[in-house]
Length: 165
Image (cartoon, rainbow, N blue to C red):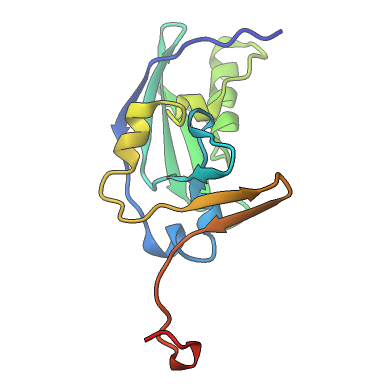
């Protein structure tokens, strides 16, 4: 059984939303469902903001992790980088790889660090700050644990043939 530590995460910068990324065809990559907010049928999604930056102290060292736009797979997906003092991780496509690689480099250990915890994605206060000034945030509806429907926007059709005016 692995031991999970309690880490105090500080939000340094909440970052910004990019309408094309957060509400466009790549939006699924820019929203997360925190483990602390799960409901059986409807799961609200929360933004992964460009430029978001958090700090956490682990074993007496301060680690800063931030989110960038674009990664090795796609320029439309998030990238993560962690640093501690003058050492920095490679740019990674998830926060766990970013924080774990720099932690292992510094402490010469095989310990794995949870990126979602280091980003504060399980912290109610940080989640509230990420939602600031967002008029609509996506959600996912689970139907009988067989089908998941993601809703990334709502509106009224301007197409007269639809019967909606």
